[in-house]
Length: 204
Length: 204
Image 1 (tube, rainbow over the protein chains, first blue to last red):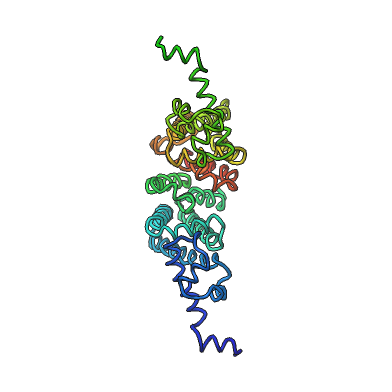
Image 2 (image 1 turned 135 degrees about the horizontal axis):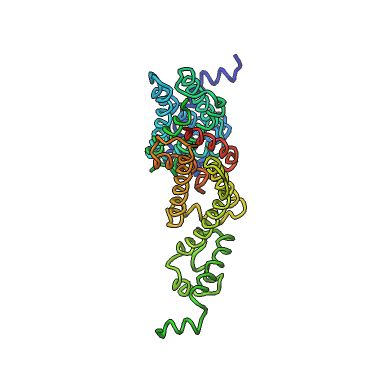
């Protein structure tokens, strides 16, 4: 064990817990003052750490925002998984998927507006967390289509990746926080109409 | 003829030509400095009219913006009509409609960014010109579906208004300037994929 590691282990809190502390404080701070308007200096002052100390754990403000965004997107992924568990048909899974994502996004907008704004920045600037979330959803759509094809619910002529990408594009305005904010009023009705259209497009 | 009308006819330029002059100058001025940042005072100074004189012809800055926006939306409607004229099938008309609207919007964004921004404000704030444009497009989609149903190209089970509204919703992110700006890169490929999905959803 090097002296440095030893020091960290015995003297201060573990790296892991410092990272958690910074993320937790930053979530509260961004949640109150907004992500784009807050600097690392503001954050350091609010937490009571030096700016240099925070930079030991995170390369940039974005790196902190990334962790917050990834946490929230994991939560949304879990909500989606729970909503789809035990749903017997692929058709109903697609309906639930769009409805659940629309509701989760709307909920975030109205109840955690500042975190919504971080998600919007993440989407606009293609942060890895946002890109990974989109890739997960595309993958999920493919799996559901495949399931429906195997069960005879869906047509099999259209190339799988084409069908999946087109469905993802139909859903995107209600998933992507940049666009959802312009669709909030119409989102519940749109989710119903668009799911039906998607299912008509998949009928054998 | 009242004295007032007489005075206007004989002394100054006609109301019609003053309105046109204001709109023309405003189009150039907003195009350069942006709609939201320009006041009626700025505009008056730039044109060389008094603010009071402009207010004789337009109730507000928005009223001027409305005329500019309506002019541009008429142009887009004409481009769409030309693109759809002589197209033999309803299927191809739907494809052309989405492609043409996407191209016209993208063109406006890259070549007339300030006017694009007026269109975005019009859409965000539901200006009558924007609402009328959307209604025209919904109507056009219904007519094309009806044509395709009558020709046996499209299924007839789904209520016409439901089918039309769902297709409008699929197209909206590529029509609405607020949303198109986030979809510019993917728009040409998306227009192809989404048209195919729409046509699969309409197949008998």
